[in-house]
Length: 278
Image (cartoon, rainbow, N blue to C red):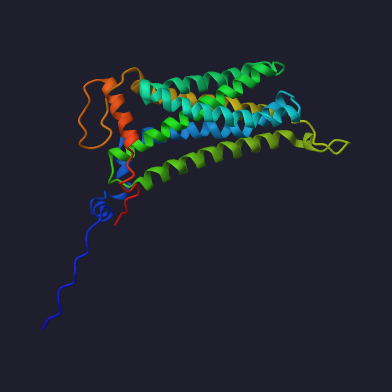
């Protein structure tokens, strides 16, 4: 007798998503991919450059002591946590678009203040650094939430490509900016970079000081200004948006906010976040 037909494997949710998965580059045709990607790049660029160059700015430009500068990273991390929590709470009340618009304005203003405050005004400088850390961290949290919204809106497009590409843009832009600034700082140092008689490193040259100022203040301010332009329309002229396919469009903005909060609480733990591709 002929052998029995092979038993058909029961299809799981992952198998169904693999069958329905869109081509890998389909994200490139969606406006939301580039919009959120640029916002994410600006947010990471501001945060990375701030964390890298603020200590150098305080040491070499503001001429603060090592003991004073040693406490600054702890303050920055503390205010980053506060900014992340505050951004989440505010977004549940006034939507993510408006919260993001508010945070990027604060981030740009604090970077501008840090660049013009006299180096002798230590408390003012410290306050500007803390506000800058708070705002840049909040911006990053909100943009990551927007990435999740985009992934829910297109569940079959491959979330790995979305997150991976945006992360690559972040690493490449931050790396290029830091390498260029360090090259300028070292090239301007010249013979001034040699050690002093007591074995200590010589003070940074004026060119290096300007490079540190650009890295700590100017680049984050330009990144925040770009983010302001990108999110101004959605913040000033809010439109209820559909979070996922098939969801009923809310009647007003308040209802959209409640619906979004409910979606965040429910989460999507029962659904795979990284559908495969053929």
